[in-house]
Length: 399
Image (tube, rainbow, N blue to C red; front, side, top):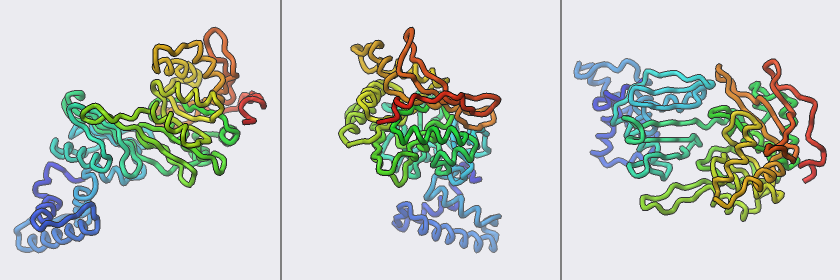
């Protein structure tokens, strides 16, 4: 692993010096960068014969590390290239963590504070977003679809905090989830039928429980020709080969202008002839706009943080109240009951395994301020099992 503290004498630094001196524009050109790196390695080899420079132990490793600095993301590039690593985060220059299969580990990677600042600049360079004292948080999508979050002091205690949730193309369908053991074939069949019947589906779960992955897989089961419009804070949903329009929010400018909220995007999405409206995750008042759209007969889908499927229904009754003082709970509850057809709950086990733990179907009615729902699948003896109950044939199946 490249020790960024030694970058002043590194091959990458010598290439940068040559680039500045000769006015070469690499512009992310990996081929040109590789040629310059190999030139420096040859010079190293010649110097080592004369005793002027130490011998490079492994030229291929040295070349990869230099290229990672020049055209990639430096010391964390090997983690980004490793398909087994699903998330990377930095709590400080010497506290670099990765997660494999839901289990985290501290790496031996060490950066300098300058290298961390340079890493943030490189990560944000392609996103069009910024982070500074006036806006100390940033959410963005990297070119490969990975999600980036950065927070800087004085919001953080001392060092910037960087989190990269890698974009995975390994799971694209319900069949993939079945093969991974996250879903049973019968549950996958039920969910596939629900999507194709035009049901409105909510995916619930905790952080890193696989909500976005499941939501993408569900939408991948949509009928051929169905037009889907997605609304997200940062692009995460992956729906290749479908009629999809993706909309992403925007942070305000330095002057506090130009912000585009999820509520605004939902309203714009409704003007785009959607057959299904998807909000990647509801956290605030956008839940009201989504519910109203679904209540008008437009199939919808979303994810929400919750501890159980029934807790998700409770939360969906609460979030719309954040849209304004004139929103009444007596309006929201029956709207949720009539609009949501299926709730799928995801969990992540202690060993990092992600799975669906329950599937419920609201009955369309409520009692004592709560929405009634029947359990279609539940976890028994560690496996997802049918309860024998199925939604009524006339509820949400004939749209």
